[in-house]
Length: 557
Image (cartoon, rainbow, N blue to C red; front, side, top):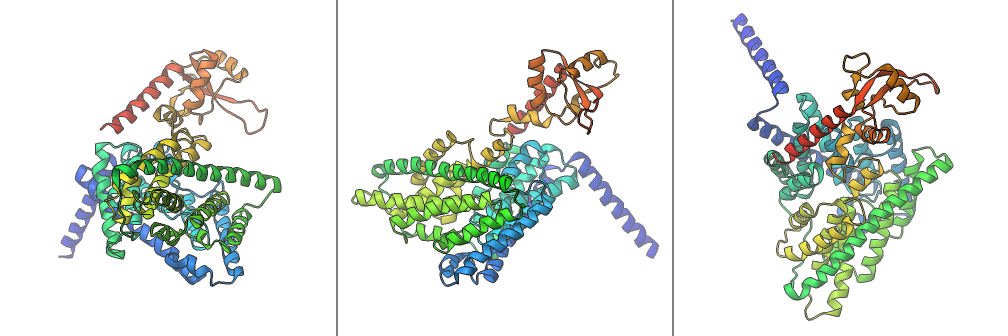
């Protein structure tokens, strides 16, 4: 009997191993892929809840109150606590990023977009986990950023682990990443429709049918997990408001233009502050962990007078949406919030820009609403409706995601009656912002890092094809002659194995030849390079065309 049982267990084990081998070799079928998407969505939802609860728990321990009433509570604390906690948190963040990331920078949504476009649907593991820990501490100890960016990156880590385990091809890995991101956004905002569209609009940057079904499955799965944990309630509760549709729509158009400019101001402020922080760090030869600590010191000093800058900031956003701030307070809070976000990001403290853009938009909309309703009191609706439209408009312009952001605003507030006003403001804000930055905050970040994702696949696909993958080896029958190769090397016209078509194609145009030698350079400066082979122009163009065709096939399948 024991032998029969043992044989049966062995047979089941061998069958399972064989199934896993086929899964890794052939990829998951449609039904199995949806099941994997369901699991990834649930895991991403769990991560979003865990991150949110972690922030609340740490804030409760550090400040004695969680984010819902944190700003009101800070006024009861002694000033040295308000200043000291961000400094200590910043130093710990600095130590984490200095130890576990190669460049001392936290990973965010921009790196997820980069992973989808340039790294076969995968993101860095160690740097990603370190960034999540840094963001958790940042948001718990006074950083003025948002929690959604770190959660999106954490979810991408889940999809990366699954893709690596399945040895998934690029398209499958990107779809799994879309599933994870959709789950993270859906659970963060209790917004399943917007979560699915955010993954398609921002991360994958296409709406292919093959990706749509599993991403929706993952989004719904994460939403179920979120609602089981915290209930089916909108993030914000709004007072009743009315819209005098046709008469009042021009005001929302003006609000959209203003919100687009406000979004650009926030983005430009962050980038200017980052540049200034880099210069100061180099000039003072500053130890990297001290940079976020100094940013924490500045934030703490600001928070003694303006506690609304601390943390995610949903209390202040809710007050703006409910019209509980007067016009000049809303304007002042908006200006200080921009400064605080720029300091946090420049200090490399971690966190995202979604929540800050929601707060900034709500404050901008409320201030505009007070002006509009006071000038035209007989034809204007409620100033809180302007706050709602402004919240969506600034966030859409910052994220470069007008469709999903509009839906997020609707689902977060549960108010579908104000749809026309929000859509008008969002569309014009996005149109303004896209002309002044590289489409969005995330894509501008990538452009600053030298990754031309915003321009489209005709630019970024070049960066995915290396000379080492294309070269014909030295001595090959169809290879280049050593004489011709060394002649070009002496002229400085050569590639290394890691160089990509981004460097090779302009070099072909410059030298006017049919091949470029590939060398292994010596570590010693002035050492003689070793000739490895050559990349031919025809091979480079064929590879480039194949890659573009693959992208087009993925986006239209």
